[in-house]
Image (cartoon, rainbow, N blue to C red; front, side, top):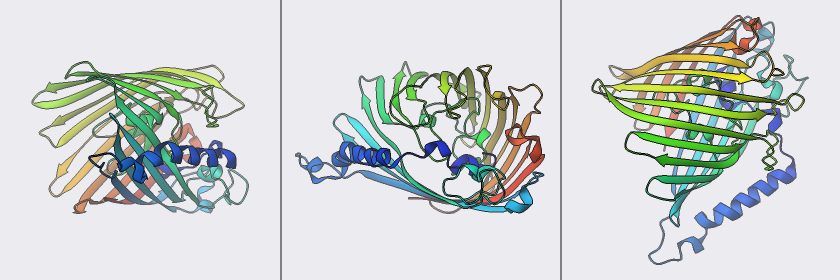
Length: 387
């Protein structure tokens, strides 16, 4: 989980659902949502309903990686990933159904990253464990229902990152920063896996207090076995304030959370904490951002558990290109572990409407609080096509 590709697309071993669960999941979602959206009966009313709105994107990333890790030479230095997203939206009753289909494939040369990929050759964690991955899944299937003019409730299979810890400059790997610390705050243990877009079931409520303040709260399944039993839960809340500052617009978000993780079934422990996300848009183009987070983990949590994080940076135009610059620092629960630092810079150019090309540079020290990596660098390119 060290390079941008590992953070974005890595397949976790805990996601290996048995065949019965996979078949049940697909059948249930097809019956519940597919019939509402895609069958002729959904359009039988007068006046006829419109077909679902369909949007999508194709993202191709290539990176050359260098580190001091003793396995790096055997792993090779180049990797690439391809992801395809399809989003279906349709008004049903007073609400809206959204289904997000996602496919990802590729290979990450970061030492140890492929140890969690199913079907790879070799022993987990060794240099010959290098087979690529290919994964297709229903990332989201949710129903958003306005209860009042100010209150909206969403339930189903939900991406929590789509509701909490947003940031106008650092929240989207397809057109902004690639490295994980600049996408979401690492101290927030979001359930599911953003890496593979495998999100949990749950409920999120959003309440618009006024034009300035929005409150959100969610209860989500936190168990990694995806059994749907809600044995372990994450509760999370956020207060979002929008303000006008110095002829610009600022967003300040305060997040609090508590959960219990069983990512390692042999070591289950509780986590609680808070995070702050802020961004400021100046002159409609330049966006400055900052994040801070702190969390308390139980005493049996591993030393590599993040204890506090801080990141800041900006993005904006420069002539015909856009650029972004970010820096982050994180401290681990283990007092003897050195801090992790991450620097990222990208330049992006619009080749055509809906087509973006970017060059990206990353430099990290002790990523994942693992001193074996020393200084870790990644030089990459990204091509994004939206339709």
